[in-house]
Length: 98
Image: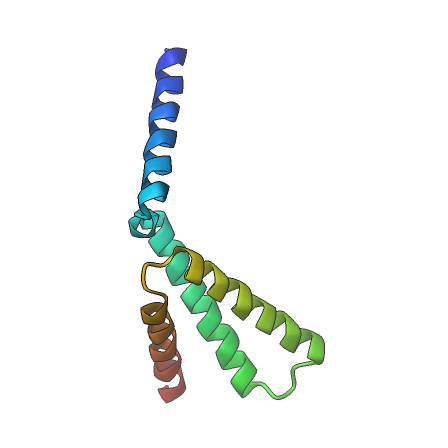
């Protein structure tokens, strides 16, 4: 029973390694969820930065750090970084029109 678990783990590791090698990891459901979460974080942070004039310098710096880190992640794992940025812009436009 224990060997079966190890074999499954090895097979899964091999599959993930191969997907990473082929850059298909961007199509994994978990990766898509993470990218969507990053897009939402970026949109929310930019919305706060643009609309809240009472933010302290520390708060503003933290929001920019969040934007930079989430955009970095998207750039590293998304197949089409430009398309993801467009989606963020559309999310922002939708929120601003409310």
